[in-house]
Image (tube, rainbow, N blue to C red; front, side, top):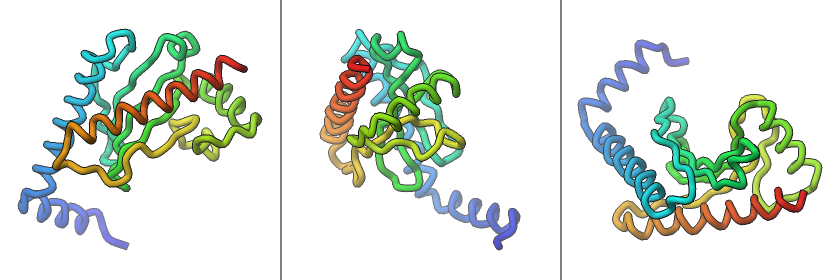
Length: 164
C-alpha cells in the first residue's frame, strides 16, 4: 500500500509538470461555461448557481425543470473524473426523496437507464453516460452532445414520472 507521503510526493511531482493543473483548469472553465450556456439558453429551467467541484471524483451542476423541481428532484450534469466522461443523473434534494423515487424506478422494472444499485453511497437515482470520449478539440460539438443527451434524459424521466 502506498503511504500518504508517497501519494503527496507523486501529487507534487505531477503538479510541477504542469499538465494536470492546466488540464484541470481548462476542464473547470469548460464546465463553468457549460453551466452558463444552460442558464442563458434555457431560462425556463433552474440552473444551479455554482459548479460542485468534488474531490476529483465528480464535478457537476444541476439543471431543474419545473416538473422535477415540484417533486424535489434535479438533473445533474456530471463529469466523472475516473472515466473522464460526461454523465447525466436524476438526483434528489435529500435521502427521503431519493429513496421514494429510487424504489419507484426499481420496482417498475424500467431499464432505459442504469438504476443505482442502492441509495447508500450513491447520489443518483438513475443515470446514463452522455459522452464517453469527449472531443475537447470541438467544444461546440461536445456541448451539443451534452445538451441533446440531457434533454432526451429529462424527457424520458418526466414521461415516466408523470405516468406514475
